[in-house]
Length: 222
Ligand code: DC
Image (cartoon, rainbow, N blue to C red; front, side, top):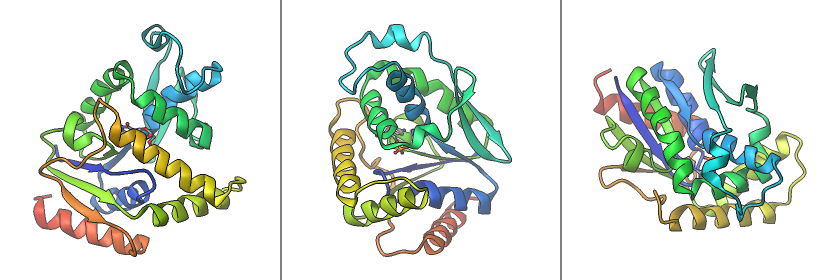
């Protein structure tokens, strides 16, 4: 099986690019952020704040996260309920960042991610795929873009979905999440030593897809 790790900060265009590339290569696209969001949503629904003043391990016993692919598109389920839409709100984003800093949560989701890569050709999108989840991935990329460009893209994406958000709020969210994700003790966001840096600043979506697909085709025997 071929596994391609795609790590990088929020809003670098990773997921949209990865979806396009996965289609070109006929791989499964796995969005691991959705798993953290699903766990986060559980705590959010329970009314627990981002400081997570609760027994996390006890709560995890009541959480069942499942991933299913419908027409190759990923859907996430929280205790049997499809929450693929609900996990995308700004509140769920913040909660995902909070739960993702907790070791029991990372351990809880680890095997599930590895199993997907054992059984499928995957393009796996996350923060620690190349460093922790799949240290032996066939290829590793670190996808990035400037914070301003990432905030612009996220703002556009959210407003197009009809959400009412302020640009400043989106930008501050990105900076805060970058800080949290790269300064946490466990599995911080950082490029794996053997990863290729792919900067999408100034590239249009189709240009990024084409460039990444070609880089993969050059390096991997498909
Ligand atoms: O990629 P995203 O915005 O959907 O990710 C949501 C949060 O989950 C983000 O704050 C970082 C965290 N995350 C993580 O810690 N490890 C991953 N492999 C994927 C996401």
